[in-house]
Length: 112
Length: 117
Image (cartoon, rainbow over all chains, first blue to last red; front, side, top):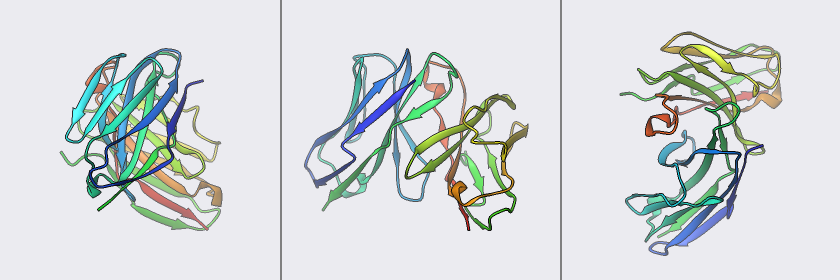
């Protein structure tokens, strides 16, 4: 069974204080690892897809990296508008190939 | 593009009533997904369709839940009869569909917050 564990559950940062969110996964064969951002009362908003170990993607202050066991979402010099819940999900090659298995998320708060 | 459209955005109903949630996927997307999000269980896949055909409904909690996709631009999720434990946010998502490429990304709608009293 595919499993995704995100840590920490919650993270409070001061504006400008860089940090990283972790996503550990267990999957029979990784088709893709997805990062989403979710604001209160809204649907998850797609950020990145990573397909193979060693891959990195960047968008503004966010950078996602992938190894064979985990992914990191690095946030550089965050701003209050980066406050949201960040969700990690995996898609496996086996079984129902289109299914995304989500972690429980990291709730990020960036204080001004 | 308007993105994935869901209606209603909020639904409050009484136990035993029928509830119908609606979704319009992004035009040209071949896959449609229904998810449920709760504090206890997070985001869970209920069912997904490919070209209007249900592919995997193993996440549907019980026979009270049913989903249809009569055409490429419309899907419904029905709960009959509804129960208080069905209270959750229900999301619809769509995907263009080629696995292992950027076109496999699922795009989510704004969700329907369902409260069953």
